[in-house]
Each structure stands twice: as C-alpha cells, then as structure tokens.
Length: 325
View 1 (tube, helix red, strand yellow):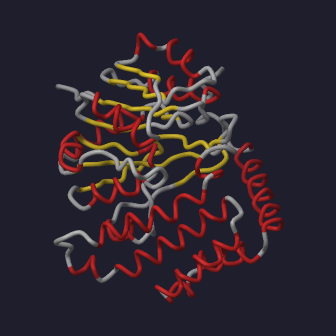
View 2 (cartoon, rainbow, N blue to C red):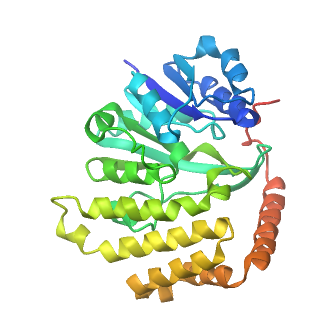
View 3 (cartoon, rainbow, N blue to C red):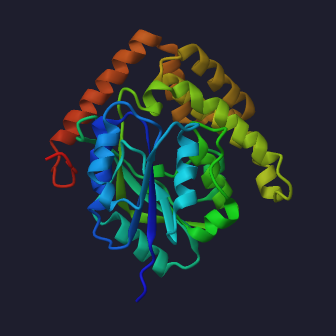
C-alpha cells in the first residue's frame, strides 16, 4: 500500500513558551511520511533556538518578517509537497495517532476533500481544562455559525488547495472560517469521531486578547460570499440568518475582551436580522453577560474557568500531553 505524504505547516511568532510542545507533537506522530514546515515571523524570544534544535527533522524552516499569520501559512503551503495538508499553530498540539487517523479516514472516504475531528482545550501549562466536541458537517450550519470546524483538527487534500487556493492575507482572525466555507462550497467535508488535537487558551492568544477582531472580519467574509455568482437559491434565502449568526458570534468575541457595550449592540443587530434568536438560550445568555457589566462579567468568567479547571483536573490524566516532561 502506497501511503500518502502529509505536510504540516506551523506559523510561529514569539511563542517560545509553547513552541517546543507543538513541534514535538508533530514529530512524535506514529505516521512515517510527515513533511513538517515552520514559518517563523522573526521571533526574538528564543523561538529560533528551539526551531534549530529540531532543524534536521524539518523539511523547511525560515525566520523572517512576514505580513501576519495567513501570509506565514501560505508561505509554508507553497513549500509543501504532501498529498494531505494541515496547519498547526505554535501554541496548539496534535494528540498521538492524529495523523494516522486522518490518513486512514481519507483512504476509507475517497469522496472527502477535507476531514476534521474534535479538540481538547488546554491551559498555558498544558493541563486539559475542557473539550470542544464538534458537530457533523453541514454547509448551511457552518455558514450560519451553528457549528464550527476546529482549526487544529482540520486536514484537506492537495486537490482542494489546487482548486480553492490559499488563505486570504487580508484576514488575520477569521481566515479559517473563510477557508472552510470556500472548501465546503466545492468539496465534501467529513467529521471524524475522534479527538485529534489540543487547542491552547492563553492570556495572549487571539481568542482571549484580541476578540475585537473576529466580528468585523466575519461580516467581510459573508459580504464577499453572498456577492458571489451562481449561489443556489437555498443558500441565498439564508443570507439574513448567516449575518445574524455573524453578529451573534461577533458579540461573543467582544465579550472575551470585555467590550460589553459593543457586544450588546451586536446582539441587538443579530435579533433584528433574525428575531427567532429571542427563542435561543445562547442569545439570552450572551445578553445577560453583556448587561452584567465588565467587572461582574470578569468575575463570572474567572469563576467558570476555575470550576471547569478543577473538574477536569479530577478527571483521568492519561490523555493529557506534556511534551516538556
């Protein structure tokens, strides 16, 4: 049996604290044909020394100033030769057996252009604090933000890259959402019933420190999408729902940086576009958080994380990956 090669690209910039765990999670996979590429944006925190430590096991690496994460990923994809592709950010990790499971799924499902699985959520110390189970893929549900594809657990075939192209470099937050939509419009996407990767939440990660960036980019993506030609009628008719979902999602991301006033405005816009949100518990929960004020919301958020961390720390730890031990 001829096994396909798998190319993994890691964009990196000043994340030396987590970078080695990321690198080792790729290099210690049990799959024999992995081409690993690291594109560093000119880090000054010791990241380059870590990359050099593993340079003989990398297909390519570079450390130079770039135009952001999307540009770094594209730079790596241009170098990639694999039949299966993926990218892993420099603070996330693959779980053991991830790549083998992906290759096996592609082999069993030749109709699939892309596959994805679930992710665990880990903290800055690599401790598991939660899990993000993803739903089976439906294009309409993704377009309306009723489901997400967890980026660290997503892989696609080379033919997808050849037809869909590269990431948009004008996007710095929601480029994966844009890319998955472009893929889903043309290819079959399949959910793997397995946890494939770990997504790290830190105080400086985009999801927690730059939540103001997602909402505006989601609107840009949807405007461009619905201006596309030859959209089927069943997609055109959900335009308002899609934009309402973007406003709901944008409100939630504003809440992560305690921009409660902006979150409130975006929630009102969501229900204006799609009044059925008034029957959605998620909308009401977001509204409550927006109205609770910055300080009360921070207290509630801190309490939630403490409770979730304590519950997960009591759970069996044999699935936790600690690459620094």
